[in-house]
Image (tube, rainbow, N blue to C red):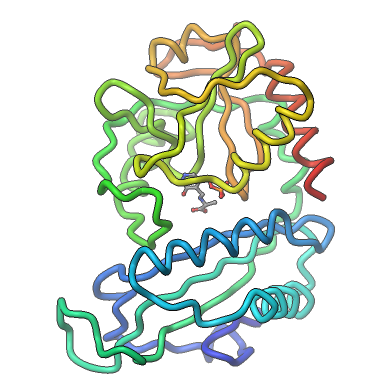
Length: 280
Ligand code: PDD
């Protein structure tokens, strides 16, 4: 695989980063994941806008222009012959020297890493037909979930707990309400209305979420942005989640309770079709 590191395209084995990098010792960095279908990037401008915002929120500059980011993504997709898959992008604060809680001086080079992962069958994911099982796990992440940082330990722990409990993923719960999934935004459907938590610092502002809500509104579907509980989700007609790598995937069981008779519902199915049609 050819990867990108600080201005160079390299074989992955030759891409080396300092052990002092703040991304490594302090999780001081941000990332984006953009999906690729038919060799094309999905929702790319949205991912770049969020990247800029994440960097700015952490007091970091953006090392590339939008045109440069696009060129790097296109090069990696072409060089690795990605038809279906993802491009992962990470920017950390770098650090040439000793470990220190204080940031390194202004002008210290950031570490920029991009790589691809080929995922044949991404669009034809059979889970879109069968649905997934989720369990609820307390949301113990920090309070700035709107920043897409590389601090992913708690989401990993929650995912492992879900697997140990026989489920596919965890829905995180804070003060009795679902915030989001470990790596996705969450929704329920009741009497034809799509319900999803409103944007705040409590959740990541999903790029797939933004596009999906726009397409749903254009299709005259009803949308309510508000928090919901696990109990409300269990008695909903449908449940589903969105992310760049999953698009729209239905949930048919929550904490052992079947949702919508454990069958994938028409709204989630329609929204997945709509997202794939409209964003390609
Ligand atoms: N995860 N919420 C969280 C906590 C996420 O990590 C993600 C994305 C989302 C969905 O955002 P988007 O639609 O922009 O992908 C919501 C990515 C895909 C990941 O970590 O792999």
